[in-house]
Length: 452
View 1 (spheres, rainbow, N blue to C red):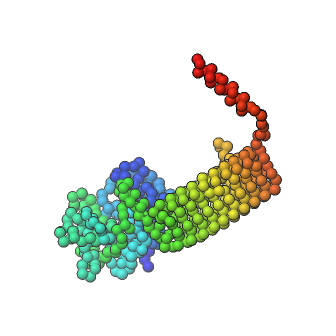
View 2 (tube, rainbow, N blue to C red):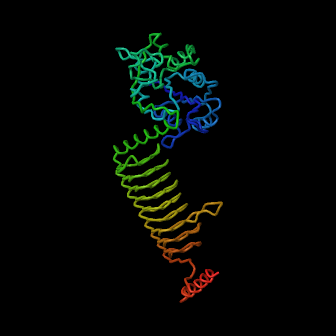
């Protein structure tokens, strides 16, 4: 198999997004669209990746620099069409002699098998491979015209197509592959003799056919090549990603009672036999193991949930939350950077931040880990089998020993030894008849004011 490289086009202005954020950095499934294309290139084995950026796209360049390094950046200045954009990557691939695929940083849903099929066409002798799709409404898409041998004869733009060609629903996605030498050799022959005065990548098919080179088209679903140029299309891409991920997880054995209300990130991992109730959101970095139950209206991000755990309803797991086997986090409980031990429970109305809760511990309603002094965060440690009474405030740094008990309403500022009872609250006092006297006094004051 030949070595592989990818050229990702990311120089577009994205003006229709109406955003200060560059189009290709807008997210689908919690991941910038550009990163989807970078990941795709890696998944199909591209050892070299070059991203073509606009001269004014400093934030995109910074993003590429962090993800791939300085050598992965090529600049298109000024923009002169897709063919010119690919040419701008030539210097970065000067020493490369394998196969090259051209991808787009605003097309996040292309499956790896579609690109693999393009490379396979090159291995079978095609000079150029083109990714196409059957369009529900072909409209202004370029048409892929094949001959009786299923070779690709031409890419015809809609405005230049005959009536017969306009009837073709097989359309061009823009994704192409060729040997590096072939790609850049054909690009060197492009002209900009067209209405826009630009160099079109699509013209390399005609140039290859003029040299008796075989070109082939590969089919994929229309949704696979959905491009994003506006907020409307961004929402469509997000919807398509969510639908795809929901179906994958259902097929893999995850139960969702209302899948259309559950939202995933690109890296969400859910094992089989997990039950997910309606209206759950999974942010980035969540791993839920088999047998867990995620109840309605919960939000998880950067969290690990073990087998037999129950989360929610209305729970929030923030980054660093780790639930060991059988742990329970109930309604209106927020957990951040805290490990909850095996079988431990916090069933309602609590904040657990920067801590460690031992196996079998019970955390009462309204418990707060007071972890922040305005400058630094501190740890709260609760031992195995400890019992924390309702409405307790644990002022970190503090440790509660194994089996210890904390009286309800306590403000704990010092460590508590194992199996001890600690109560820290004001002493209750009682004044008999005080309430009656107070009411009589205030009623008289009120009556006097009315007379005046």
